Image (tube, rainbow, N blue to C red):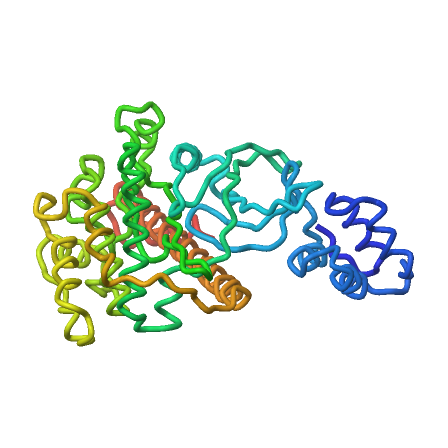
Length: 416
Protein backbone atom coordinates (compact mmCIF):
# COMPACT_ATOMS: atom_id res chain seq x y z
CA UNK A 1 0.00 0.00 0.00
CA UNK A 2 2.33 2.70 -1.32
CA UNK A 3 1.41 6.26 -0.37
CA UNK A 4 1.38 8.48 -3.48
CA UNK A 5 3.77 11.43 -3.51
CA UNK A 6 3.17 12.90 -6.96
CA UNK A 7 0.02 13.67 -8.89
CA UNK A 8 1.03 10.95 -11.35
CA UNK A 9 1.03 8.34 -8.60
CA UNK A 10 -2.31 9.66 -7.33
CA UNK A 11 -3.82 9.39 -10.82
CA UNK A 12 -2.71 5.77 -11.02
CA UNK A 13 -4.62 5.02 -7.82
CA UNK A 14 -7.70 6.82 -9.14
CA UNK A 15 -7.56 4.56 -12.19
CA UNK A 16 -7.09 1.41 -10.08
CA UNK A 17 -9.96 2.31 -7.77
CA UNK A 18 -12.53 2.39 -10.55
CA UNK A 19 -14.16 5.48 -9.04
CA UNK A 20 -14.05 7.53 -12.25
CA UNK A 21 -14.26 6.94 -15.96
CA UNK A 22 -11.12 7.76 -18.00
CA UNK A 23 -12.94 10.75 -19.49
CA UNK A 24 -13.71 12.28 -16.09
CA UNK A 25 -10.17 11.62 -14.89
CA UNK A 26 -8.69 13.37 -17.93
CA UNK A 27 -10.94 16.40 -17.37
CA UNK A 28 -8.86 17.14 -14.26
CA UNK A 29 -5.53 15.46 -14.99
CA UNK A 30 -4.95 17.55 -18.13
CA UNK A 31 -4.27 20.53 -15.86
CA UNK A 32 -1.78 18.65 -13.65
CA UNK A 33 1.94 18.07 -13.99
CA UNK A 34 2.32 14.37 -13.21
CA UNK A 35 5.94 14.69 -12.06
CA UNK A 36 6.04 18.06 -10.31
CA UNK A 37 2.58 18.48 -8.78
CA UNK A 38 2.00 16.76 -5.45
CA UNK A 39 -0.58 14.08 -4.76
CA UNK A 40 -2.33 16.45 -2.34
CA UNK A 41 -2.67 19.05 -5.07
CA UNK A 42 -4.20 16.45 -7.38
CA UNK A 43 -6.58 15.29 -4.67
CA UNK A 44 -7.68 18.86 -4.01
CA UNK A 45 -8.32 19.38 -7.73
CA UNK A 46 -10.59 16.33 -7.93
CA UNK A 47 -12.51 17.34 -4.80
CA UNK A 48 -12.92 20.91 -6.08
CA UNK A 49 -14.28 19.53 -9.35
CA UNK A 50 -16.75 17.44 -7.27
CA UNK A 51 -15.48 14.25 -8.89
CA UNK A 52 -14.16 12.80 -5.63
CA UNK A 53 -15.52 13.16 -2.12
CA UNK A 54 -13.20 14.21 0.70
CA UNK A 55 -13.38 10.66 2.06
CA UNK A 56 -12.40 9.12 -1.28
CA UNK A 57 -9.52 11.56 -1.72
CA UNK A 58 -8.19 10.88 1.78
CA UNK A 59 -8.31 7.13 1.23
CA UNK A 60 -6.39 7.44 -2.04
CA UNK A 61 -3.80 9.70 -0.40
CA UNK A 62 -3.21 6.87 2.08
CA UNK A 63 -2.75 4.43 -0.79
CA UNK A 64 -6.06 2.69 -0.05
CA UNK A 65 -7.72 2.25 -3.42
CA UNK A 66 -9.19 -1.22 -2.95
CA UNK A 67 -12.76 -1.43 -1.74
CA UNK A 68 -13.79 2.09 -2.76
CA UNK A 69 -15.98 0.43 -5.38
CA UNK A 70 -18.06 -2.56 -4.31
CA UNK A 71 -19.78 -4.24 -7.22
CA UNK A 72 -21.64 -1.40 -8.95
CA UNK A 73 -21.57 0.95 -5.95
CA UNK A 74 -19.11 3.78 -5.27
CA UNK A 75 -18.46 4.48 -1.59
CA UNK A 76 -18.99 8.19 -0.89
CA UNK A 77 -18.41 8.64 2.84
CA UNK A 78 -18.87 6.73 6.12
CA UNK A 79 -22.15 7.29 7.97
CA UNK A 80 -21.61 5.03 10.96
CA UNK A 81 -19.70 2.24 12.64
CA UNK A 82 -20.78 -0.49 15.01
CA UNK A 83 -19.80 -3.79 16.50
CA UNK A 84 -20.24 -5.65 13.21
CA UNK A 85 -18.58 -3.25 10.82
CA UNK A 86 -19.09 -0.01 8.95
CA UNK A 87 -21.90 1.73 7.10
CA UNK A 88 -21.15 3.87 4.06
CA UNK A 89 -23.20 6.16 1.87
CA UNK A 90 -22.82 4.88 -1.68
CA UNK A 91 -23.96 5.75 -5.18
CA UNK A 92 -25.05 3.24 -7.76
CA UNK A 93 -22.95 3.39 -10.90
CA UNK A 94 -24.65 5.22 -13.75
CA UNK A 95 -27.44 6.67 -11.61
CA UNK A 96 -28.14 9.22 -8.90
CA UNK A 97 -29.52 6.57 -6.53
CA UNK A 98 -27.86 6.78 -3.13
CA UNK A 99 -27.95 3.87 -0.71
CA UNK A 100 -26.26 2.74 2.50
CA UNK A 101 -23.86 -0.21 2.39
CA UNK A 102 -23.23 -2.14 5.60
CA UNK A 103 -19.89 -3.92 5.34
CA UNK A 104 -18.59 -6.49 7.81
CA UNK A 105 -15.32 -5.53 9.50
CA UNK A 106 -12.23 -7.36 8.24
CA UNK A 107 -11.89 -9.33 11.48
CA UNK A 108 -15.34 -10.88 10.95
CA UNK A 109 -14.96 -11.96 7.32
CA UNK A 110 -14.47 -15.59 8.35
CA UNK A 111 -16.55 -15.45 11.54
CA UNK A 112 -19.39 -17.93 10.98
CA UNK A 113 -21.57 -16.37 13.69
CA UNK A 114 -21.21 -12.85 12.28
CA UNK A 115 -21.85 -14.07 8.74
CA UNK A 116 -25.04 -15.70 9.97
CA UNK A 117 -26.00 -12.55 11.83
CA UNK A 118 -25.73 -10.31 8.77
CA UNK A 119 -27.77 -12.83 6.80
CA UNK A 120 -30.46 -12.79 9.49
CA UNK A 121 -30.46 -8.99 9.61
CA UNK A 122 -30.82 -8.81 5.84
CA UNK A 123 -33.62 -11.39 5.84
CA UNK A 124 -35.47 -9.49 8.56
CA UNK A 125 -34.95 -6.15 6.82
CA UNK A 126 -36.15 -7.42 3.44
CA UNK A 127 -39.26 -8.90 5.03
CA UNK A 128 -40.31 -5.58 6.58
CA UNK A 129 -41.86 -2.73 4.59
CA UNK A 130 -42.99 0.06 6.90
CA UNK A 131 -42.31 3.82 6.90
CA UNK A 132 -40.80 3.58 10.40
CA UNK A 133 -38.35 0.77 9.59
CA UNK A 134 -35.14 1.16 7.62
CA UNK A 135 -35.50 -0.73 4.35
CA UNK A 136 -33.03 -3.42 3.32
CA UNK A 137 -32.76 -4.09 -0.40
CA UNK A 138 -30.33 -6.99 -0.66
CA UNK A 139 -27.32 -8.81 0.76
CA UNK A 140 -24.36 -9.70 -1.42
CA UNK A 141 -20.82 -11.03 -1.47
CA UNK A 142 -17.89 -9.24 -3.10
CA UNK A 143 -14.27 -10.13 -3.75
CA UNK A 144 -12.15 -7.05 -4.35
CA UNK A 145 -8.85 -8.88 -4.56
CA UNK A 146 -8.24 -9.19 -0.81
CA UNK A 147 -10.71 -11.91 0.03
CA UNK A 148 -14.47 -12.21 -0.13
CA UNK A 149 -16.68 -10.22 2.22
CA UNK A 150 -20.41 -9.72 2.78
CA UNK A 151 -22.36 -6.50 2.61
CA UNK A 152 -25.95 -5.27 2.77
CA UNK A 153 -27.64 -2.67 0.58
CA UNK A 154 -30.00 -0.52 2.65
CA UNK A 155 -31.99 2.68 2.55
CA UNK A 156 -29.81 5.75 3.20
CA UNK A 157 -31.23 7.91 5.98
CA UNK A 158 -29.55 11.19 6.85
CA UNK A 159 -30.74 11.27 10.40
CA UNK A 160 -29.71 11.76 14.00
CA UNK A 161 -30.07 8.93 16.51
CA UNK A 162 -32.08 9.45 19.67
CA UNK A 163 -28.85 8.95 21.59
CA UNK A 164 -27.18 11.75 19.63
CA UNK A 165 -30.24 13.97 19.96
CA UNK A 166 -30.28 13.61 23.73
CA UNK A 167 -26.54 14.34 23.91
CA UNK A 168 -27.05 17.56 21.93
CA UNK A 169 -30.40 18.72 23.32
CA UNK A 170 -30.70 17.15 26.79
CA UNK A 171 -33.39 17.15 27.95
CA UNK A 172 -35.53 16.89 24.83
CA UNK A 173 -39.14 18.11 24.97
CA UNK A 174 -41.71 15.68 26.28
CA UNK A 175 -43.75 15.90 23.07
CA UNK A 176 -40.66 14.99 21.02
CA UNK A 177 -39.78 12.00 23.21
CA UNK A 178 -43.38 10.78 23.05
CA UNK A 179 -43.54 11.17 19.28
CA UNK A 180 -40.29 9.28 18.70
CA UNK A 181 -41.52 6.38 20.82
CA UNK A 182 -44.98 6.54 19.21
CA UNK A 183 -43.51 6.17 15.72
CA UNK A 184 -41.10 3.45 16.85
CA UNK A 185 -44.04 1.59 18.38
CA UNK A 186 -45.85 1.60 15.03
CA UNK A 187 -42.78 0.21 13.29
CA UNK A 188 -42.30 -2.47 15.93
CA UNK A 189 -45.95 -3.48 15.66
CA UNK A 190 -45.39 -4.17 11.96
CA UNK A 191 -42.33 -6.29 12.81
CA UNK A 192 -44.26 -8.18 15.50
CA UNK A 193 -47.12 -8.80 13.07
CA UNK A 194 -44.56 -10.39 10.74
CA UNK A 195 -43.34 -12.64 13.54
CA UNK A 196 -40.13 -10.74 14.34
CA UNK A 197 -38.81 -9.60 17.71
CA UNK A 198 -36.15 -6.89 17.40
CA UNK A 199 -34.36 -7.75 20.67
CA UNK A 200 -32.09 -4.69 20.66
CA UNK A 201 -34.35 -1.63 20.79
CA UNK A 202 -32.31 1.29 22.13
CA UNK A 203 -31.74 5.03 21.49
CA UNK A 204 -28.83 4.29 19.17
CA UNK A 205 -31.09 2.21 16.92
CA UNK A 206 -33.73 4.90 16.37
CA UNK A 207 -32.91 7.48 13.69
CA UNK A 208 -34.82 10.76 13.40
CA UNK A 209 -34.81 12.60 10.08
CA UNK A 210 -35.04 16.36 9.64
CA UNK A 211 -38.80 16.11 9.03
CA UNK A 212 -39.25 14.38 12.39
CA UNK A 213 -39.92 10.90 11.01
CA UNK A 214 -38.37 7.92 12.82
CA UNK A 215 -36.62 4.86 11.39
CA UNK A 216 -35.82 1.70 13.36
CA UNK A 217 -32.37 0.27 12.57
CA UNK A 218 -30.36 -2.88 13.09
CA UNK A 219 -32.37 -6.07 13.13
CA UNK A 220 -29.10 -7.98 13.55
CA UNK A 221 -30.34 -9.63 16.75
CA UNK A 222 -33.88 -10.11 15.52
CA UNK A 223 -35.48 -13.45 16.29
CA UNK A 224 -37.45 -14.66 13.30
CA UNK A 225 -38.12 -18.29 14.22
CA UNK A 226 -36.13 -20.25 16.74
CA UNK A 227 -36.66 -23.39 14.62
CA UNK A 228 -35.30 -21.69 11.51
CA UNK A 229 -32.06 -23.27 10.26
CA UNK A 230 -30.09 -20.01 10.25
CA UNK A 231 -31.39 -18.99 13.67
CA UNK A 232 -30.35 -22.38 15.05
CA UNK A 233 -26.93 -21.99 13.44
CA UNK A 234 -26.49 -18.61 15.14
CA UNK A 235 -27.29 -20.22 18.48
CA UNK A 236 -24.88 -23.11 17.82
CA UNK A 237 -22.10 -20.69 16.86
CA UNK A 238 -22.60 -18.76 20.10
CA UNK A 239 -23.95 -15.56 18.57
CA UNK A 240 -24.82 -13.07 21.34
CA UNK A 241 -28.56 -12.32 21.35
CA UNK A 242 -28.69 -10.67 24.74
CA UNK A 243 -29.07 -7.13 23.42
CA UNK A 244 -27.64 -4.04 25.10
CA UNK A 245 -27.48 -4.27 28.89
CA UNK A 246 -28.76 -0.72 29.45
CA UNK A 247 -32.08 -1.54 27.77
CA UNK A 248 -32.47 -5.32 28.03
CA UNK A 249 -35.68 -6.86 29.37
CA UNK A 250 -35.35 -8.91 32.58
CA UNK A 251 -36.50 -12.15 30.92
CA UNK A 252 -34.13 -11.61 27.98
CA UNK A 253 -31.11 -11.64 30.29
CA UNK A 254 -32.28 -14.95 31.77
CA UNK A 255 -32.95 -16.77 28.49
CA UNK A 256 -32.51 -14.67 25.37
CA UNK A 257 -34.07 -17.36 23.17
CA UNK A 258 -37.31 -17.74 25.14
CA UNK A 259 -38.82 -14.27 24.83
CA UNK A 260 -41.63 -12.66 22.87
CA UNK A 261 -42.53 -9.20 21.55
CA UNK A 262 -43.05 -7.87 25.08
CA UNK A 263 -39.27 -7.76 25.51
CA UNK A 264 -39.25 -5.04 22.82
CA UNK A 265 -41.90 -3.15 24.79
CA UNK A 266 -39.65 -3.12 27.86
CA UNK A 267 -36.65 -1.93 25.83
CA UNK A 268 -38.76 0.77 24.18
CA UNK A 269 -39.82 1.87 27.66
CA UNK A 270 -36.17 2.16 28.67
CA UNK A 271 -35.62 4.23 25.54
CA UNK A 272 -38.47 6.55 26.51
CA UNK A 273 -36.96 6.85 29.99
CA UNK A 274 -33.59 7.75 28.46
CA UNK A 275 -35.21 10.33 26.18
CA UNK A 276 -36.94 12.04 29.09
CA UNK A 277 -34.14 11.81 31.66
CA UNK A 278 -30.94 11.86 29.62
CA UNK A 279 -29.50 8.66 31.05
CA UNK A 280 -30.37 4.93 31.05
CA UNK A 281 -32.59 3.58 33.84
CA UNK A 282 -29.60 2.02 35.61
CA UNK A 283 -26.46 4.01 34.70
CA UNK A 284 -23.85 1.72 36.23
CA UNK A 285 -20.57 0.56 34.70
CA UNK A 286 -20.91 -3.12 35.57
CA UNK A 287 -23.00 -5.15 33.12
CA UNK A 288 -23.93 -7.65 35.83
CA UNK A 289 -25.17 -4.84 38.09
CA UNK A 290 -27.27 -3.39 35.26
CA UNK A 291 -28.85 -6.76 34.54
CA UNK A 292 -29.56 -7.40 38.22
CA UNK A 293 -31.21 -3.99 38.50
CA UNK A 294 -33.40 -4.65 35.45
CA UNK A 295 -34.60 -7.80 37.20
CA UNK A 296 -35.02 -6.47 40.73
CA UNK A 297 -34.85 -2.67 41.07
CA UNK A 298 -36.95 0.33 40.11
CA UNK A 299 -35.16 3.13 38.27
CA UNK A 300 -34.91 6.58 39.74
CA UNK A 301 -38.20 8.43 39.22
CA UNK A 302 -38.47 10.67 36.16
CA UNK A 303 -39.88 13.36 38.45
CA UNK A 304 -36.52 13.50 40.21
CA UNK A 305 -35.08 14.91 36.98
CA UNK A 306 -37.92 17.05 35.59
CA UNK A 307 -41.43 18.12 36.58
CA UNK A 308 -43.04 18.69 33.17
CA UNK A 309 -43.91 15.09 32.28
CA UNK A 310 -47.69 14.44 32.43
CA UNK A 311 -48.94 11.73 34.76
CA UNK A 312 -50.45 9.91 31.78
CA UNK A 313 -46.98 9.54 30.21
CA UNK A 314 -45.47 8.39 33.51
CA UNK A 315 -48.16 5.72 33.81
CA UNK A 316 -47.50 4.51 30.27
CA UNK A 317 -43.77 4.37 31.00
CA UNK A 318 -44.30 2.42 34.21
CA UNK A 319 -46.40 -0.20 32.43
CA UNK A 320 -43.89 -0.50 29.57
CA UNK A 321 -41.10 -1.17 32.07
CA UNK A 322 -42.95 -3.67 34.24
CA UNK A 323 -40.61 -6.45 35.37
CA UNK A 324 -43.06 -9.22 34.46
CA UNK A 325 -44.02 -9.42 30.76
CA UNK A 326 -47.68 -10.13 31.53
CA UNK A 327 -47.95 -6.78 33.33
CA UNK A 328 -46.81 -4.81 30.28
CA UNK A 329 -48.95 -3.81 27.33
CA UNK A 330 -50.05 -6.83 25.33
CA UNK A 331 -49.31 -5.09 22.02
CA UNK A 332 -46.92 -2.26 21.25
CA UNK A 333 -49.51 -0.46 19.08
CA UNK A 334 -51.45 0.30 22.30
CA UNK A 335 -48.55 2.54 23.31
CA UNK A 336 -48.71 4.42 20.00
CA UNK A 337 -52.42 5.12 20.53
CA UNK A 338 -51.98 6.28 24.12
CA UNK A 339 -49.05 8.59 23.30
CA UNK A 340 -50.86 10.25 20.39
CA UNK A 341 -52.29 13.09 22.49
CA UNK A 342 -48.88 13.94 23.99
CA UNK A 343 -46.96 13.78 20.69
CA UNK A 344 -46.07 16.39 18.09
CA UNK A 345 -44.21 15.51 14.92
CA UNK A 346 -42.12 18.55 14.06
CA UNK A 347 -38.91 19.13 12.07
CA UNK A 348 -35.60 18.50 13.81
CA UNK A 349 -32.72 20.90 13.33
CA UNK A 350 -29.23 19.40 13.20
CA UNK A 351 -26.11 19.45 11.05
CA UNK A 352 -25.66 16.05 9.43
CA UNK A 353 -22.03 16.90 8.67
CA UNK A 354 -21.42 17.65 12.34
CA UNK A 355 -23.08 14.37 13.30
CA UNK A 356 -20.86 12.47 10.85
CA UNK A 357 -17.72 14.05 12.32
CA UNK A 358 -18.83 13.11 15.83
CA UNK A 359 -19.53 9.53 14.72
CA UNK A 360 -16.09 9.37 13.13
CA UNK A 361 -14.41 10.45 16.37
CA UNK A 362 -16.47 7.94 18.34
CA UNK A 363 -15.59 5.13 15.92
CA UNK A 364 -11.88 5.91 16.24
CA UNK A 365 -12.10 5.95 20.03
CA UNK A 366 -13.98 2.64 20.11
CA UNK A 367 -11.48 1.02 17.75
CA UNK A 368 -8.58 2.26 19.90
CA UNK A 369 -10.28 0.88 23.02
CA UNK A 370 -10.85 -2.45 21.27
CA UNK A 371 -7.19 -2.69 20.26
CA UNK A 372 -6.09 -1.78 23.78
CA UNK A 373 -8.33 -4.50 25.24
CA UNK A 374 -7.01 -6.95 22.68
CA UNK A 375 -3.41 -6.11 23.55
CA UNK A 376 -4.13 -6.30 27.28
CA UNK A 377 -5.80 -9.70 26.87
CA UNK A 378 -2.85 -10.97 24.82
CA UNK A 379 -0.38 -9.78 27.46
CA UNK A 380 -2.44 -11.39 30.21
CA UNK A 381 -2.60 -14.67 28.28
CA UNK A 382 1.16 -14.62 27.67
CA UNK A 383 1.90 -13.85 31.31
CA UNK A 384 -0.33 -16.75 32.37
CA UNK A 385 1.44 -19.06 29.92
CA UNK A 386 4.86 -17.94 31.20
CA UNK A 387 3.77 -18.66 34.77
CA UNK A 388 2.67 -22.18 33.84
CA UNK A 389 5.95 -22.83 32.01
CA UNK A 390 7.96 -21.54 34.97
CA UNK A 391 5.99 -23.73 37.36
CA UNK A 392 6.48 -26.76 35.12
CA UNK A 393 10.23 -26.11 34.88
CA UNK A 394 10.49 -25.75 38.63
CA UNK A 395 8.64 -28.99 39.20
CA UNK A 396 10.87 -30.84 36.72
CA UNK A 397 14.08 -29.61 38.36
CA UNK A 398 12.82 -30.46 41.83
CA UNK A 399 11.86 -33.97 40.77
CA UNK A 400 15.26 -34.77 39.18
CA UNK A 401 17.42 -33.80 42.15
CA UNK A 402 16.59 -33.88 45.84
CA UNK A 403 19.53 -31.59 46.68
CA UNK A 404 18.28 -27.98 46.30
CA UNK A 405 21.79 -26.56 45.86
CA UNK A 406 22.58 -28.99 43.04
CA UNK A 407 19.20 -28.31 41.48
CA UNK A 408 19.91 -24.57 41.40
CA UNK A 409 23.41 -25.22 40.07
CA UNK A 410 22.03 -27.49 37.34
CA UNK A 411 19.34 -24.97 36.35
CA UNK A 412 21.99 -22.27 36.12
CA UNK A 413 24.13 -24.41 33.82
CA UNK A 414 21.14 -25.09 31.57
CA UNK A 415 20.18 -21.40 31.43
CA UNK A 416 23.72 -20.40 30.57
